[in-house]
Each structure stands twice: as structure tokens, then as C-alpha cells.
Image (cartoon, rainbow, N blue to C red):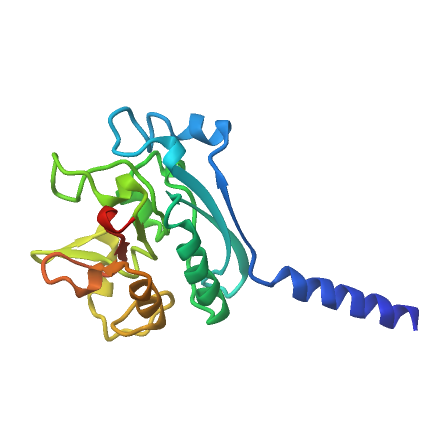
Length: 211
């Protein structure tokens, strides 16, 4: 009888551990120190106080329970958590979700690793004078290798050429009318997969004018 009680206890604790969990908090002094001069620099269009760290549960490509972290603008954090909760409940898969300072702020390296990321104070891809909405904490790239950026036939990341074929059925792939696209659009986000040139399947963005 005692063994049965222990079994039920551990079973229930295991089930609870796989419930969706999330947390949004101000950037800690330690995290700010790691970001400064890497993903945030003097002259960026937002201050570190405008940003928050969002932790959330997700399923990885092996369908294992994980916790991911993204830095985003504080005014879109709650809406993103709502989306992440729905993606968790519908078992959408992320390969990995790590802060981009771990890649030295290098967007290409992060994309090649199929890492989902959000804030990074950088310019629009291919431009040198215009900040990306990532620099505002108002954009997120999801499974960027599986969902590449394509412009004039060039694919980024460079190791994602096979995923130009959107008829493939792959883990974490985003397609027209998928639930993930619907949920972002419902909350006022745009999807780069609707664009023509470039077309950016990984990318969702929220316009500053809507804040």
C-alpha cells in the first residue's frame, strides 16, 4: 500500500512538473552585465529598463519538457506568454530557446543553431543604418534554421537551404494558417512569412506604433 502511495505521489509530481510555467521579470544586474556591449550597446533604441526576461515552458525536438528564455520589450511580454502557453498546449516544438548573448550576439550563429531568440540590438539584415525591430525587443525569430530568411534566392542561415521547400513536414516548421501564425496575428503581430522579398518564415514582429 505504501509503495502504491509513493508511486501515485511521484506520478502526480511528474505531471505537475510538465504543466506550462512562465515568469516575466526585470533584467537582473548580472544579466545586464552579460548583455552590455554584446546584445545591448550605447545608442540602442531602447533602454535595458524597457526590457524584461521571459522564462517559459516548451517542448523540444525530442518532445522533452524544457524551459526557454527570451528578452523582449516589457509591453509585449504578457501577450507573448499567452502565445507560448498555447504553443505548449498544442505541442509546438522548439529546438532550443537561449539568450543570444550566449552566441556573442551573432545572429548568424544563433540561426545556424536553430535557436529561437528575440531582443538583439542589431540592424535590419542587409542594412547598416536602420535598426531591426529586434533592437526594440519587438521581434522574435522561431526555429530560424527550419524557417529560414530568403531574399533574392539567398538563404539565411546558410545551412538551411533544404528548408526552402515549404511542402516538407518538419519539426517546428511554420506554415500559412498554422495555429502559431493565427495566435501572433490575433495579438497584432506581423509574420515575415507573408512577405514577398524578403520572405522571413522565422520572424514575427510588433510595430512600435502599436505599443
